[in-house]
Image (cartoon, rainbow, N blue to C red; front, side, top):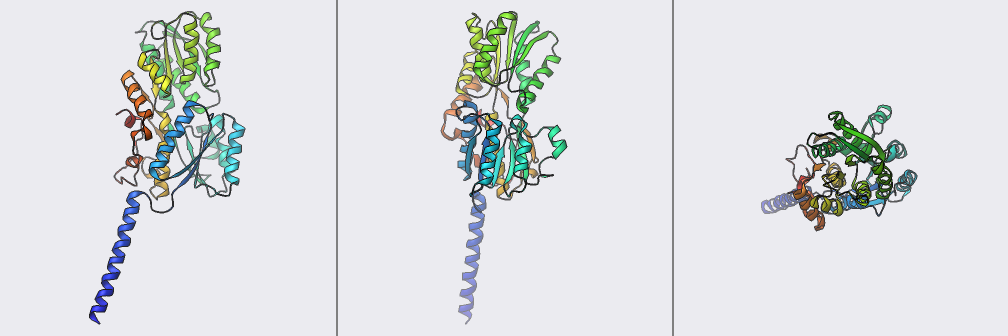
Length: 370
């Protein structure tokens, strides 16, 4: 009798120990419960280098974290983006999370569409503006299923590019042309704000004209063709992305000007082409790193899905310093990293599920520059 009771107690103990060990192993591995499923409403063109690279980094994170990710491109068309959102809402297999961008200030309409849905929404890259939020509130307020946001330091990036260009003139007066993106896009507006802040600090620099190149190389090329002959004293060209910088560069070269010597150009992004241009000096000032945003958002959603709320590790609305000023050496290191499978990163090291000691994520592009 005693032996039977003892055997029963021992079996029960071992079963409980096994269950506890298994649960701990699953929690450590981030596999407890079903994998999180995510749809990303990518606002860019499906052949656009920046947005394709953005999605690839996001997918690398999803793969490491065991998440399901589907990316739907909006082809820079606000109506198509909204239709993509409606398609997600109408689909039989709905994701756990919808990630959207406040492109052309369309974020409130996405939130309204999903207001009665069990799908949780997350704003990425550009969130609702303060004006928009004054009307409808922020995450976890009026729209309870809007759980958070992650955006980069766009205003600072615009400021750094302008300051870097101005420094090339070593205190001498000069003229500048500027190429912003799309007039009604928050990231473009913030970069423009950074440019204007820098110019306010340097009255010796004259901004001849600010144009909206719509992020496009051809459009910036055509604009620069018209304006560079008109403003022949221009030595500085500020561009809110790499495509517009290359368009302006082509127009300058056709006029016999040598980038990096006769005039200086800034750019923003991480294409192989722009990194090489920073290495060889034809781009004088380069800011990059925000293509990593989607990957870090996947880390946040992975942890949230596992019961580790990112709101407790830096807040539900994050503005992280994802942009970095890249010198030639850093551009070369980033170029090599981007060419590596999975970017040479294990995204589990950034997750608070795997590393509970993380108290604030402090996302940045530094891991890719090491």
